[in-house]
Image 1: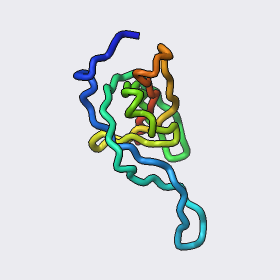
Image 2 (image 1 turned 60 degrees about the vertical axis):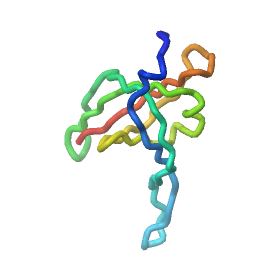
Image 3 (image 1 turned 45 degrees about the vertical axis):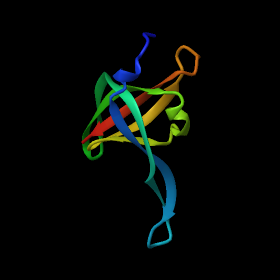
Image 4 (image 1 turned 30 degrees about the vertical axis):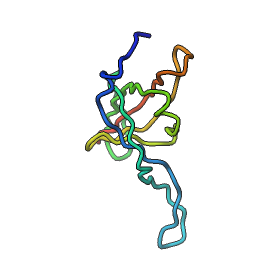
Length: 112
């Protein structure tokens, strides 16, 4: 993996963590809350695909986000990252060179 310099981590991402709450009918509902954590990373395109759902065609764009390991300590695979008006769901977290310096997140952005 090529070395990433701190100056290349230019995009701020808000971390939202998953939680369950109870709606007005008493049913459990999956929601996300702002963890007030902002991490800086690098966003790179990794591919795109389409799938047919009952609601129509769903477009999925895949990206790779690189974060410093120290900042990524509170980012879980169940978290979501918000960058401006864009929301990314995390599919996987990896440490490619196993040096615990940079963390790669495999994420997807759903566009309907």
